[in-house]
Image 1 (cartoon, one colour):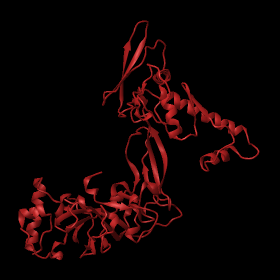
Image 2 (cartoon, rainbow, N blue to C red):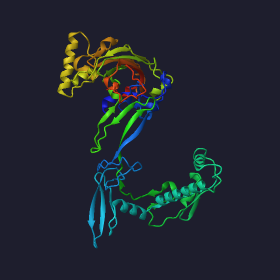
Image 3 (cartoon, rainbow, N blue to C red):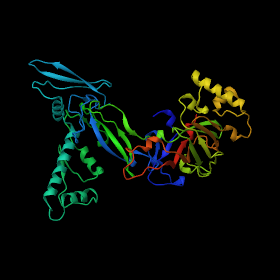
Image 4 (tube, one colour):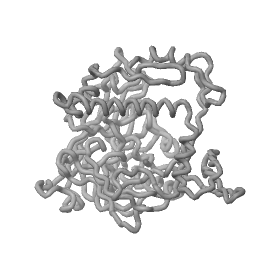
Length: 476
């Protein structure tokens, strides 16, 4: 995610919220992580979408596994590191009597694994599985015993009480209602110690502490169960498969994401439909002008002009201040709450950057900054930029701020000032909930029949509202 999206955090939820005090902070997402539904006319998070896997393949050998539904890892000779998940290289070492061993070496971290000598041809997966079964440690044995016990208990429950409850009802009764069944409590035997599965951890711990391990055990235990030091051997893992999936809006079934599928090129990353929110919602970048004064820079990504209306509370709610304050309030003033941003039709990239975001790091940026300063001086309009840039051109006097003079605009961007009295909270982290209403023409990409469902007529214009949470501590 690029740096310019960091200030644009969007509230996305199926519940309509009018009061910022009712905003659930767990439903706030970066703009780059959201999609936009043209039918609902709302930003959508991944939790508000239904997905469907349409392609499954190995990113290393590019073998297509789409038809094998339950397969999750590559069955070829593709392995990944169990520590860092990087690709593993495999080397063969010859031994006497036509024996061979295989060395798995991670290309990124120091992980290395060498198999025992193999005298008969076997697949690498069979060799790894055999090595894993022959070198089981205490945790593997305990897990396998627990798994076997639960499987036996499930099979026994299916064989009994067939006249009263079905196996599915019995399983629901165990998992959801957490009731005690009539079947005897299973017991797991580990070494010389037995303990019941349904006992609490505090009851099991002293029993685990009494378990005796031989000197060859990889589990080295000191005095208590909580202080055990585990030195487990790790084995190479088969490469996890990659997937391509489509997304639809849960509310209206509109397609939000549809990748292009070419069987001969499974790793091709192209999309037939991709309604990312960054292409339809204005990007907001905040910069600090001076003490208590910030500049909100709106950038329009749409090819048509937008009418934007802003609103917020007179005081920032306490849940957006960290640490919370009960005796001090933070007043917010937005002198310009309605404006029009031009369309994104200028092909010059630097012309689409707000003046407050231009820097002196490159010659092109510096030349554009000087050019805008001259044009603004000729029209007797003051250039609005950050305090660090103003020091290069003008010295600001400590007088009452003239907010209309801080207003600035370009081809597809608009800058407005806001006043936030935060000088009394120097060490606080503050977020500003900003309610945004947008009206614009419907983009041509939304008129495609592939996007909307056949039973739904797409709207003719875009008109929607949403909450944008601005992080003031990230201001330049």
